[in-house]
Length: 355
Length: 280
Image 1 (spheres, rainbow over the protein chains, first blue to last red):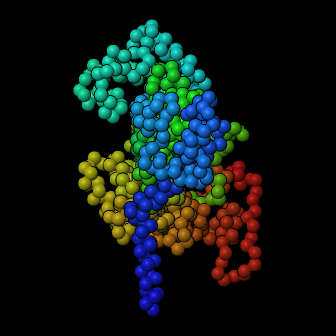
Image 2: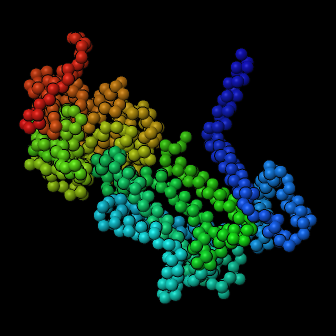
Image 3: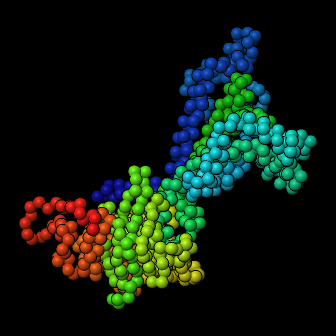
């Protein structure tokens, strides 16, 4: 009898543990940990499988055998694979990605320096892309088959098919060289570079913190062209997805209900239909944002933007494995983070997903 | 029931332009409606729903409505601008849709959707609108109006969803309600309950009702008059109480399809059709 009661009590306790807000958070943390473990495992294995000898990269090919062996031992490469993996994980958890061969800095420090540049660019590009892409998609869906629809399709198609390096160079040629509306490559005019103390690493934020409007506007004039060019691509994608989600929602019964009630067409489109379109659209926007956060190599090269994409590419070309793996882990973590954020937003937007 | 005519429909035609050619959904339907309850029955595709939608001007974009007359009180429904339509829809003519699972907006609370219907046609503050909405939920016999008000449609059962739909469509106090298969998506056990609530409210408020259904018995027990439609035509019009005196073979056929408690329990007869019915 008493055993049964105890069992029941245990059962209730477990039920309380996995439901409610605490349970949701715990489940989230658990799935996060699993995903992150998988990410580390894959990056670790890739690092071991690649035909690059990290010892050779460190000592050079003229080093005598005993030096080679000693360094190999110091790097822990003589240990069994599972032990190496264990050491790798505990290092990463302590924020230690090792030393970059190329820059001679700890990889984490390098990433702290380059990631904010990419973050700033990607965020601004996504803001521009979303705030233009959604209205364009709605506009196209509402006027399906008429000229606004075709216009949005042509703009979108052009955005999809033009190579970004060409678009970037043309942008610089027209808006920087000929018209002089924007500043050239880099994050600031080189004259200003020493004036700014990197607090957050985000130029737009740092200059505002220091209250220097001149610097702020200089940073704006530098970022606006690469951000717009990246935004064009996410705009094309977002507009196309918005259009198709919108068409699907506009044919639903509840839209007819709203019309029966005598609601204005504007409200039907922007409140009723878009409210439902936002649910799947959040995932689309999050994915396009995460893609930009990875760093777009071509854009960063053309605009001499010291971001993550440029850093990883350079490291890869120089067989700097610690930097490549560190960068990959950061990119993966960003993907996980953005996905989680979109999950949370999804729940906020769709009452059916709340449990 | 007064004899004053509320809605007059003469020779209503609805045609859909489809890639496979024109489809005549409604072919020359005429009827007059006073402050009464009119049933429209027919099989799927007989044009009964399209008749209801045409009255509200909500035929799909590829459809075309023509009529010799489509008069509602002082309003000529055949020639309304979108702006004028918005004054008619909801406020004067409203429609109860079939399945609350699809006809309520899933991401808006039930309360917001009811309030929206009310405030579109009545200039009142948020507080007053909320009070009215809660009253209306009570009127459709929802036990815990406060909770349902804050709930989302997926949290309500089918019967409750349809009562919410009734509350939402009746709250601006329209003169004519079109109920398009209002109970077809519901469990048999709650069908009569929901129908009774709708019937009570329509009676109390002196509204006219067009009740569209394929359920002859349900229609005859809640309506004064019945139109029987077949392939876009009205084949017979008769008082609900005289259904058993139906003359048209199609109506008789429909009646014969109903299983009877007593009488023989062998196979139900199959409906016989004649091409000439669709010409009349």
